[in-house]
Length: 364
Image (cartoon, rainbow, N blue to C red; front, side, top):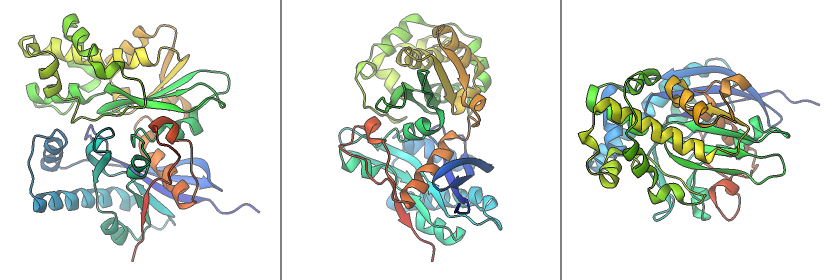
């Protein structure tokens, strides 16, 4: 007998800090059934600026200030989640939280803001949270965790595919076929460097459709110096964050880079992102792009130019809006955690075995 479908809400706010994406998804006997409803909630500007400073390591905060940020983030999550509940029965929430620190190599830990107990109390829903540290306790990078979801939704038996999420950082999943091990890792900067530079120069949150970058020219020496950095040649598994790939990183690898024209720098930062993705995805017959970078027409065109043998398109062509892939992934991971299912995520992270990802907070 077929059971009634379950509904899970996935919540994601990435390192681009462009807002909170919440999606209500349907599952039938553990099988993905699609997205039913979505909400997008912006960060208040003052909170966004505080989070950016914390994420970049530029802000020293006291314990009380840290707690206040945690509560402010939690309130924003509740505002995004609440419209998706209403009178609809929801089994639970998959809450990624707002990453402010991630180190998968030395400290082996990852920190996200968002109080799951407070959120459970105010939504009346079970909350699955803290997805990364169980994997890290088993020697994994704790990231990326979405490749298993990409595999479940986008793998094709007769086509070598890649799925790249371009947020603040770019992460790539390589899908070579159902029998191949799952491969996924961070390729380097996504939108983060571009966002940071346009905010510094023009006070704008992001370069809409890459228009400012399109007005500039590539500084070949800057791009070559950046891509020659040892991080790019390291084999996976590997993960990183905006605390690593920041403008301070550029200061270290190319001390005189700021002397160039500002628009040329923006164009060059776009080239660093595009080139670092393209060379890692070169073996793909089809590359599916999601995340905020999929809205950057200049970046999408550059990927297509750099990968002439690859069909470059968005996940929207395959039924999942580019803005909702990561939130949906954490609804999927939460449903699996609640059902005590594991998956092949450790093949991408480097953990010794598949952990049961996530802790569970119950409503009162």
